[in-house]
Image 1 (cartoon, rainbow, N blue to C red):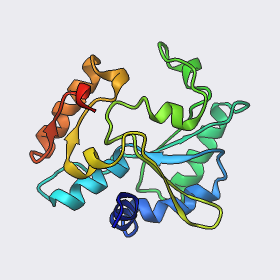
Image 2: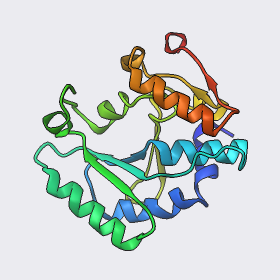
Image 3: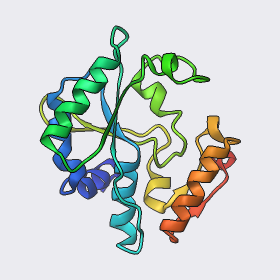
Image 4: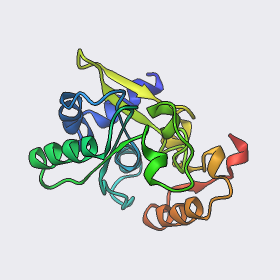
Length: 183
């Protein structure tokens, strides 16, 4: 079984798999569900309930050069109405640098996700128009499936990335912290 098939198999019958069709219906341009919802679902599947990392929210990234914050708020409102017990973080990567000081302007959703803190967090999934799963895995899936916490290259010296990694280790002792220069 290839890595993408394994990822789909893990996620399909979880809250991630249930929410993907609703996100797809929003028709956000170039969208991906990525981040902690994907990462934590996989790690709990692999390491069991002793891994206390859970889905805090669903990170949905999209790219619309003409877009504004109202798109984000509308998408979040629709999803919250459908799934009132879940939290959603919807961000247009095209406008990220305008409201997040110190960030460079991204050229695509994928460009933004590549700069998320950790390689196991920079994993995107979505459904295409036919309902087929698609995957964005700029650093591969080995770190995710092996429980490795590694900063992405842009965050090697970022104290936030190291602080988050410490939190992951406290909640899931099976994880390993690895220096990012070994990607």
